[in-house]
Length: 411
Image (tube, rainbow, N blue to C red; front, side):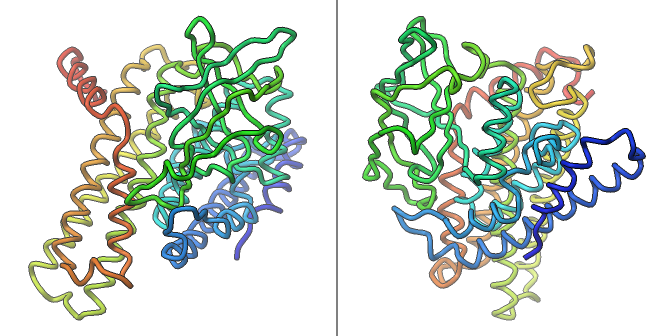
């Protein structure tokens, strides 16, 4: 398998002496590395798709898949070049490549894509809000030690509280739900409420603390291999090095809402996989000349391409807004509200795109195609569950509110 690990390391060394390298040479080198990264993602996605049924069981985790992701250097790809990565997810000018990477991994297996998206999100947060020493420490964990990061925010009534103990130490009390990759993600963000109610970001080094996992809590119809258990963090103690930024920084806009475009990219990858599986099924049964099947496939192709355009539009707006994801606006004329509205439009549109593709697939393949050994039923289960992201109604409502109050959503 093609690997970019050595080339990423070489690029890191070159970045130390950029003054001696022409800008055109640097641009060509960057484009080559990005192309290699996306080619790796295609190879890994093919392996993920071939192995997806083997890990489609509660209590499993796609270990081989993440082994390949680590070997290819993709765990480090969200890091800036000076930390041994490609800046995917943090360099705003490379947002589109980041979304393509997530889409490709999602095409291979949505469970893998869900966990990898959390890893990208976590490294975005660290590079946006962390101190120099924190960035260096966690970059080494991802780059050299192949640690998987995540963001575990969901919780019920027994949610996490962050209790200051004094002298730079803190204690956690309470649980998180939907902890994707529980038992395998070693550097999750476990954010919680301070005594005054403000939200504080924390990273928990899982192998250094004792927590209680509840695998019985996770009994889903789809996304089984994400191992999204409930985890109790009560009595876990952290020092100041695990506390990221200040209270409420996590909720800073437009970046909190704009980050939704990441999971939308993974979801669109699932729709892409369903499209490919449907076409292959019809080819295998020699049903490609049926005019009704041709019409349905045509609708699927048009629908997915509209999703690709939404991803590109969101990526362009993020790149125009600030030089880094999470950074300050470079153009006062481009408001954060506009960026949030556009991403809300994109995630809403992509949800509908995925549901349309599911329906068209089901009509195309019928009952026979929704049974093993065909992959469509599994993909539909995974995608249907993954589409149920929080705050859909408020997201759509905010789009309508801005549409009524703004002269244009597209300027």
